[in-house]
Length: 117
Image (cartoon, rainbow, N blue to C red; front, side):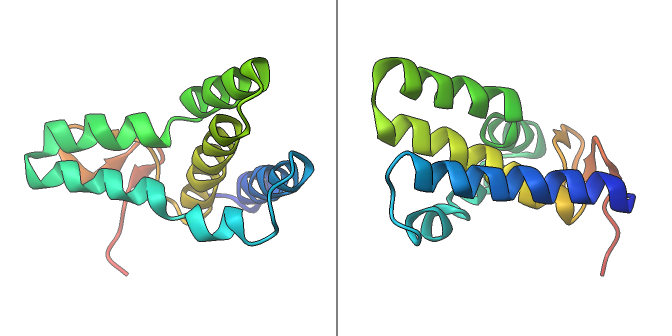
């Protein structure tokens, strides 16, 4: 991914962190939960298709925004934080080249094919 796109994702990740502080959570809460969305990879234990669907639900930035807005609308800060964590996590993944998954393989993403490092 080009530097400009990576910098965009870094800004989104930092914005999510700062918003978590703004809504009243301690500085460490966001970072403790930032890797939780990766539990969605357990869907790959079933098969690649189910794994990709579950993974994409937990890494879709639109769904994350809807959760945060629902939390904002209802006044439920936990839901707002969950959306910020999902959004921030997906931005973090995209910084490292991980994108939404196609159903044929974990390494086939909307950002391209993951390479072995």
